[in-house]
Length: 243
Ligand SMILES: [Zn+2]
Image 1 (cartoon, protein in one colour):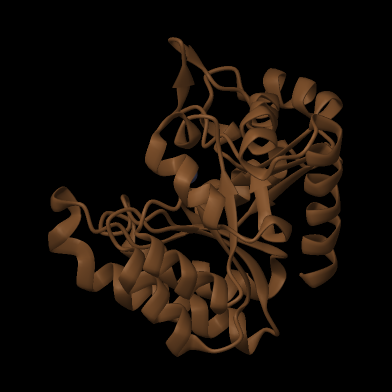
Image 2: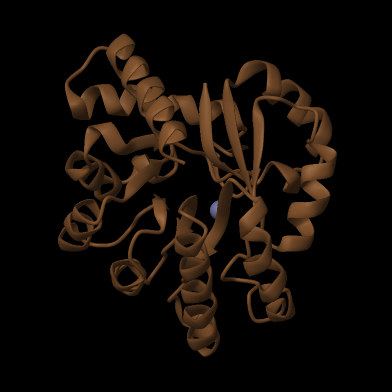
């Protein structure tokens, strides 16, 4: 099982859960919300071979943690995975939007200078601005748009730019989520949970629950479950070859 966007460090029983995840999931990408969290999480999950930690600075905490931006940019050199980064255009973050854009640009520029990174990107309420920033930044590696919720035209633009997409059970409960999925290039889709911030039937999703998307993918793609699982595993192999 695979989860490419988990906040595993933010579950109340993080380390105990991580040990289980390391056995059950073949690959889990833990995105972090700040460079300091990245350091701590990398240390704690260090010996768990199937768990990988991404260096991030979440747009929701960017204003409060702006002093960590320098640490984020300088850390990209030594990090294989970057995330969670991006832009959030929802009303409560409007006043930090310019700051967010500056930070996101700095991250993308550094990723390009370092030869490209796999980047898990947040784009809630800001799909258009995220795509514009990616288009302007050049070859930043592999942008992996997490929980994409923009429009179809934006989705097509993102696909043309080479973006990948991570989709989760929570996103795919909505009709909009499913119709977006139908437009995504099948060979650039991966599962995610975004746990512990997501739930199904009142239960918090854990990293192995990302695999529940296989049922929906099988309906939308018109494939058997086996074929879907094979597709997702070969997508992951390809992603890891790219970055
Ligand atoms: Zn997230």
